[in-house]
Image 1 (cartoon, one colour):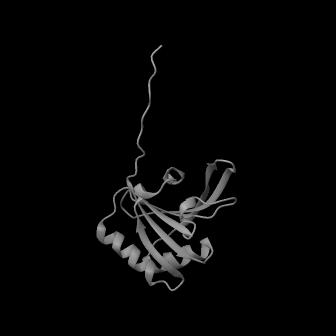
Image 2: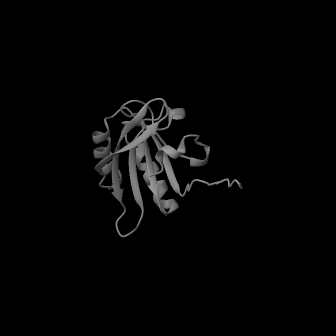
Image 3: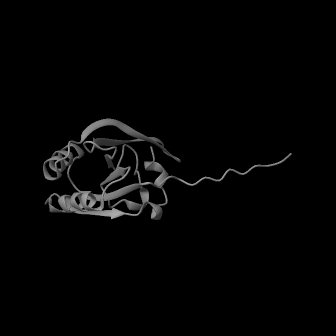
Amino acid sequence: MNKFTLKYELDLDFVLIAVTSSLKDYLLCFKINRQIFTDFARIEDLSVHLTNIGDVFFSRYHYQLPESETDLFLLANKGTEGYLIPEMKNVDYFILIKNYIDENDLEFIIEGLNKLPEILNATEVSPQKIKSIENIIF
């Protein structure tokens, strides 16, 4: 009997911004919407099955850039029972940008986030360096 081994690579075609803020998710979205002219709206929570814990739910907000296919998602790092990205416990939220975004637009978003006094830090993170990146692929 022949054995076949399936090898796959995750599609990491997105940009990830780590955000540190003590605000509640809905208040953070309100401030972000006013600062960088977005319209984040709450959608169904992200459900992730974590080993030894079970299903964990994380709040999730969505915004689509006008006249483009670029989607922005604001994801809480702390869920009902654990962390979305356990190796980054000091990060409160992630902004995941799917599809193409212009470098100038990305810079505008990061600079706008860092101008908010309620946000301690917003910085781009390389998805390739995160061990548990499969938790945010949906």
